[in-house]
Every structure is written in structure tokens, then in C-alpha cells.
Image 1: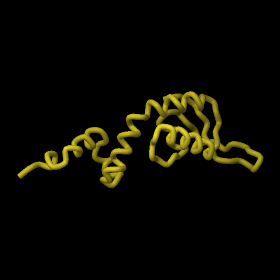
Image 2 (image 1 turned 90 degrees about the horizontal axis):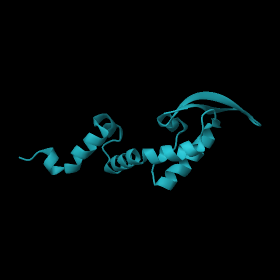
Image 3 (image 1 turned 180 degrees about the horizontal axis):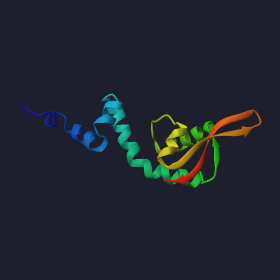
Image 4 (image 1 turned 120 degrees about the horizontal axis):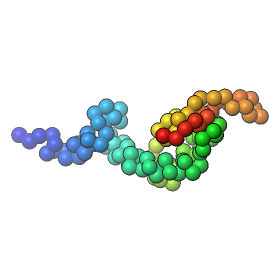
Length: 114
């Protein structure tokens, strides 16, 4: 009788790279697991691109953050829906209301770099 590891050698790789909770959150889908590992490997590239675009003290609308992230994700080949809260991984952010010509809109203020 063989072990799961011998039947599915990639299982150990996913477990070590992502952990059980993240594997469960991705519903055990191999495509999602591979994409998550790709994202982990490219986080430094994402950080570098964002730090060149976004600076401490900036107040940015949520829609603008999503657009910026979409451009970066597309450039790096990341298959992930951009969410403004993704900035939590790279910056210290604080939710704010930003005045615009059409009223006050949701956004974030960049308070620090992580």
C-alpha cells in the first residue's frame, strides 16, 4: 500500500508552500494552488512596482487602487481579481473618504511601507 505522498508528490510541495488552511480556502483546485504559488513568488515584483507608483501620504480612491493593481497583475501574469485591500500586504493603509466632484468616495490613505 502506497502513501498519498507517493501517489501525489506535488501534495507535499503545496502543503509546505501554502499550508493546510490556504489549500482548503482554494478548494483543493490545482490551478488555484499553482496560481497562489506564482503569486507568492512574484510578491517582491509586485511590491517593487507598487512602491514606484504609490507613496506614503497618498490618498487613493478604491477604484483607482483596483485599476493600478489590475495593470500590475496583468503585467506580471497574475490571475487574481484586484481588491483595494490587497494593498495591506505591501503598505500600512487606513480607510478614508476622499472628496471628489461627485461627492465623497471610499479610498485609502497610505501611512507606511511594509
